[in-house]
Structure formats: C-alpha cells, structure tokens
Length: 445
Image 1 (cartoon, rainbow, N blue to C red):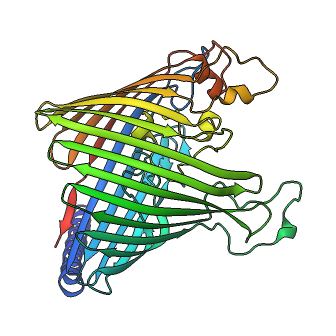
Image 2: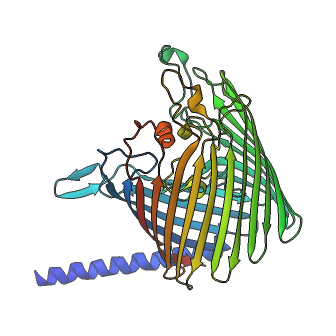
Image 3: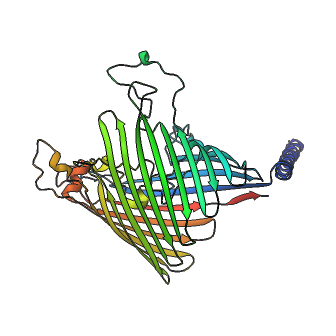
C-alpha cells in the first residue's frame, strides 16, 4: 500500500503544480497580450444585527431577533485605451438559511448567487463613451439615483449610458429597462385580478438626463431630469409617466461642505393618481481639527390639497433619514410626506478610530390623519418623534475595517398611527449592528 500512496501523492503534486503553472501562464498571457491592465479584487462583508423595531414599531409581545448576513464579491476590472470593463460576481445570504441541509450540517443554498455588475464602456472619441450592461448609478448626493450600498445586495441597473466627460462639464444620458417576460397574452390572466408583470412595483423604464457644471474648484451645479414609466394593469404597452426635475448645488472647501437640492415632480403613476410634488433639502458640514459637525433639513411633500406625496424612487434611504429606516416614503408615512431636522457629529480620534452620532427630529408634512374617516384622531399632531444613531469605526488597514452601530427611536402616538400600531402599545424600538469588511487585492497587472 505504501508505494501506491506515494504514487498517488506524486500524481496529485504534479497535477497541482501543472494547474498552478497554467493559471500563472494564463494570467500572464491575457495581461500582456490582450489586456492593458487587469485587476482582480474581492469583498467579504459580514454583518450581525440585533433587531427590535427596525423599519416598524415593536409591540409589547415582540421579541428581538439576532441574525447575520454576508455579502461576498469577486471583481474583475480591465482597462485599455478604448475600453473599460467591470465584472462582479456576488453572493448574498443569511447565515443558516441554506435550503439544502440536514439536521447535522449545511450543504448548499440554491439562492443568493448572482451578478452585481457586468458592463463595458466604449470610449469612441476623446470625451464621449457608451457604457452598457448591469451598472451602478450614483449621482449627486444620491437622493433619487443611488447604489444603496448599505443594503447587502446593493442596487444596480440594467442599462445604457451615453456620457460626455470633461473637467468642467459632464453630460450623461441613461436608460434602464426592466422586463420579466418576453411575450404577453391577456387571455392567460384572470380578469378579476388585473395583470401586472411579476414584481410589478418596479419602474418599467427609467431614463434620465444629467448635466454638471463646475463653476470653480469649490462650486458646482447639476441639472437633471428623471423620467419613470410605470406599466398599466392588464397591458404590456400602456405606460404612465412620472417626471422629476432637479437642481443640485454643491459647495466644498478644505473644511466646509454644503449641499442643497430642489426637486419638482409631476405626472402620474396610475390612471387615478396625478402628481405635483416636491422635495427640498439642505445639509452642511464643517471640520474643526479632528471634529466634524453637521446639520441638515429635508422637506418632502405629502398628500395635501395642491400636492401629492413625493416619490424618491431609487434614492438612498438610511443615509439620510436614520438607520432605523422608518421613513422610506411615501407609503411609510401614509403619504403624509416628511420633515426631517437633524444634526450630527464625528470625532476622528486618530487614523484608526472614529466615533459619530446623529439625531433626527421627524414631523409629517401633511396632517393626513385629519383625512381619515371613522375614528377620532384629534389627539394626534404632526410630531413623528425622534431618532438617535451612534456609530464607531475601526480602520485596521486599507483593506479591513470594523463598524458598529446603535439606533434608538423615541416614538409618539403619531408614529404609532403611521406604522399601524394600536395606540399606546409600542415599546422600546432599537437596532444594533456590527459589520466587518475585508477588501483584498488579489491580482494586478
């Protein structure tokens, strides 16, 4: 038996060495003969969360839930004189959710694996290029168009992007299409349940035009138009159009940063809904030595006499209205809009450690409870309560960091009303998390 063991060991060693040499040779050939530059890196992000009221108010019978989620990505990037390309494989899962398992072990999960990004960018002239494929869009301060990176899945768009880029001016024209079918037959659907394509809450077509002017090294202005098309029930071609016109102002210096937005929304998302809505925001930060202080204000319209609830579509959520994610709007306030007055502070203790805090005061923009019929809501006012967010970051190195978060919500009776909780039954909403992120560079040539 001993000679056989050594023979198999020798064969195994030879195969592994041959495979390793082949892999090195392959990478060398593609990096020198085909690619001008090839970079391979990864992201492994694990997040543990303790949830007792995330997104909605808990009641006295609710128990806290502890779970862990993980995002794993393998990224390939290539550049040459005329083409850029990016390919990102992604797997997102909760620990223990594997659906092929036994009592004694976990085998595999049939869901969670997919493509985060897959695009190429063709530079067909000095400043013009066309980008096509699954790509990330993240414009201005991400109020309407965001990558939502806090979400473990993130948000990418299957789209075309025609763009012109110079130092003092940028012009981008994008178009995204969402399909879950390639044919349509009305007769195959129940007329009593009007057909909308699966996952019909998604925007069917999303198009935008974005222009940015750099007036100086400290000041810029962006003008943009977003057009969202929603598919009408029981049809494949009738669309409703909701448009948003936006102005974004950006001022930044070494110590100060100020951002402001004006959004006006018009059109409709259905035959019965007409839109005339708006959102106004302003935020600023100023750095004093190792401490950065900031403040912000948001005014988002609700269903009033002359306005409708503003829809922030693909915009960032937890980045602006608290880590508890109570107000994703418009439905999360019963279409009552939102006013958010907030303040924040960050202390960079040294190059490795920093701590921060933010406090939000929330109000309804429109007293939608006065429009309710059948109950007495005279005890309510527009006060939605407040939220305290705390965070700590430890930057161990360029490729590894640890972040910890804690959030607590101070609810009111109006909060209970918009969250559909019986009066006086909510209790102690809190959420805590710790997240470890590792981004190693695996190969570069």
